[in-house]
Image 1 (cartoon, rainbow over the protein chains, first blue to last red):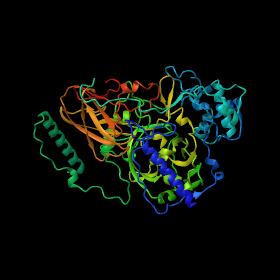
Image 2: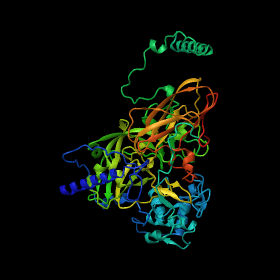
Image 3: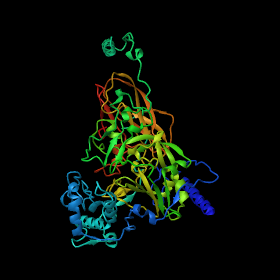
Image 4: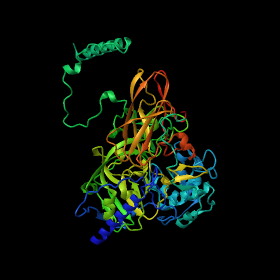
Length: 217
Length: 416
């Protein structure tokens, strides 16, 4: 156990050194992750040296964390639970739990005027119409977000079957799955979203302002 | 004479004399000083227990929701810091801006738990008492919403600096380095990303690269010398210095280590930047160097021509503020302002510069430079590379304030 901890500290320190090596260079944020995401890294922060690090956490099993373990890795659906739901089931759940805020057929309602349908093909137009159909790169985002946050006055109360059904219904309204569709973990991760390739990694700094002092324009 | 009538007399005399002095011009002699009633009476006694509040004469200094983009519900909404009334680099706890996605929960610290799991050797659970026992650190950082300035881009929509820049606060945070807790759980070598998740009704969550988490991320339980306020994450939250505010997840209940980002709605459909050719910039999390003049600023009025100290705030998510320049002629000529110590990493920095207003129209703007050499751009600079549509994120452009010959100050974003 002790030697494992020492190894870990070494890994962490090596990582910090790599980060510093990437700090030289021009204006902006030159230290980046392997994916190219700027970190804004500056100097190392001193940590209080301790002969033996305190350990106050209590071990817990993944099984005992299950009720909290609700995240879905949406790019491949990792974490999607068992269960299934159809477009038709989603339509009736929507009518009972969602329509009051989001409006008929997800076209927008009194509290949330923004539509959750349409906009596919609008990304190169003005305005861009942002809906789950037009914007989400991966369909499992629907499952993660609906289960996590909806309905707003009773979040995290829908069953997995209900969340699959609502995901199916919203995908169908957006023309991305047929009216006969049934969503489960495998079906949801297979849905191809039109904005899948619409994202680029942060490439800032993207301005070249200069520090002109007199007669600047 | 009763207390209230003596106060009325005092106010009347003072008003009359002040008016006379003003009418006589700048060289008039000050009126004879009157004895104020507060010096001839007992003040309020010390209460047995109390939480002190600002003077009753400071009731106008308040957080406000935006008056430009009006939400029809106020659970997923925001309120803004009155920067025009903030003389220092620290925002008082009652004035720190808010952004929630499902309202403010009231969490009992005795029952709250923080879990760490995923790609770790041993999943762990912490109580608030556990967290308080670790060696603590306090650091000063700015905190800014990615959407600060979202309503004011190509044309002025907001009147005051509270509305244009008030999704910004300065805080001293106290807590435990996230690395301390993660090392205790034992990070699997495959662990490259960390999910932070809240215990509120939105269960707001974000993916953060492990490098940043091990660099300077804190798990905090206190702000500005007291426990976190409920609206700022009580009893425990993440603080990710220099990055957009929403990655610093409030009401933290769960930390999960993974080998890839999660690509949640909050990092795809939201908090991404519209770019040309229909693209969206993702994981744009550093808040780049920015500054704004807070005095004088929109909605204020300059009294008389002559000396005015122009004051403001500057900050950078990539380091320290190195310099701030101020222009009084809409960006043609600039003078370097004085920076006020302390100047700290990823922290608000005060700048100030004397100005003799000649009584004519002027356009004031500030431009910050950070320790990487990055120079704060103008809206016109940013327009060259970004597609300015919809919700604007990461808007760090120079803010112009136009002054007219009456001394009235108005927002001139996109105009100057």
